[in-house]
Image (cartoon, rainbow, N blue to C red; front, side, top):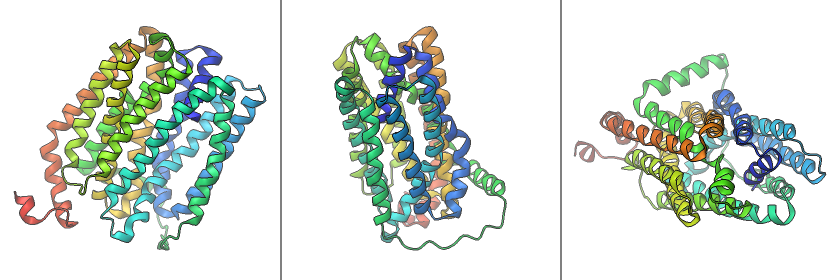
Length: 394
């Protein structure tokens, strides 16, 4: 709700596509810079305690944004500053939360990790499905301020949930080396192991060229489809529906086997859907194409997350997941800035067309590397009991 309300507020105050891209850039660039360090922090300290502090900061950010809007004193520089602050919070929150996932499922020896990640994705996308639609209605009825206020209140439930967890005590990590040494160690590990490297690559391309379609949604809602906030809510809700279906699909799978192939096929579907959406001028068709885009985006992201968490050395988990966050979220600000600048010159539809073609190209590149990826993953699957020697040979 806050994301949709913020985008609409920026566009209402400025009427500028470029400003939409700039605010998106400021909210996401901290992830690119800080996420790797957050991964080192995640590997060194208690992740649940870190998340409690992080969620408290996010709550205060939402309170400040709500207060400024409801008091009618909001200005564009306020939004830019608060967006940057939330970006810093998210830069630590996402990699720490991602690496915390396995701690919550390790009681079952981690066998349900893929299902847990898919369930987490389904909850997130249920929120993405309901939130934009509700935000569109609330913006029309009472303005953006209430959306920000409800978001601030929701953090109380998040903090209460973290406090209620009965977690297995984590062994203390003795810190002997400099943070940059640990950072380099994690980077070397990620780049030298082919499957991790190629997964991070396709994530980065999709995030840079494909994910900024969300920043351009207000433009499509108003100028292409000639609608208002409710149209924006329908579009965002359609993408959320597709993502939710994708999450349910992954949650229904009983094994990580075969999941690596879903990464490139989902990325290909994502690119094709974006290309189709860039040409559409009919609301129902645009909603259907965004549903396909949401499905492809979610399957590709969650499948990548599951495989990375499965094959990574536990000692490197926080750092690898920070690079996952950097590829997924850290590239998006550059995409948002690129999308805003290019759309300002050649229009939003053509900008989205370029992004869709790039995502298709990344998918085909990943497909060509599949034999190498499978060869490297196979021994890890055998070691973890995911594949038997006979299945691996076959």
